[in-house]
Image 1 (cartoon, rainbow, N blue to C red):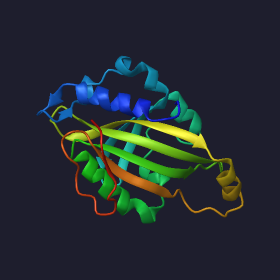
Image 2: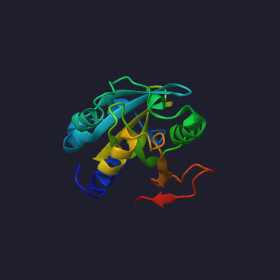
Image 3: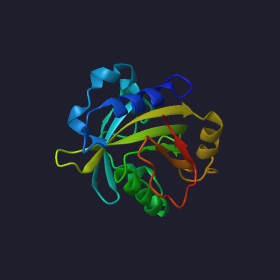
Length: 186
């Protein structure tokens, strides 16, 4: 993915242009990968199955290449230390309950010992009944060689999150006590 936020902005523009269910959330079935074909390598789809269980159902080739030791259908909570699950669940619960974008930056230590700086944007999609159960997003992975060395030496903590925020897509943002960082995307 090129440097900058152009693909993030393009995905938000596409999401905003999709037909909405109840004028707020697009349905998963309305999403057309051919409309965002240039983003496919960095695209991912997730499904919220239950609390502490959001499954990656589809990953683009760049996401899959960066996460060689993760297979599709893996629970994203498996990639977080258990001590962070409540915080992440609260964040995702608010994201699925509101038509906004979720933006996260973090370091990700893979089972191979490589460390990547990861930036994602996630947008909720509704199922046929109108429930926000799905998420479409983009991931940008940059290998962090210095932190990879530290991880191999055991001198780096578990997958630290540096930022979790919501982006206002014209419907406001949910309250999120742990993060006051909100950005409006026109």
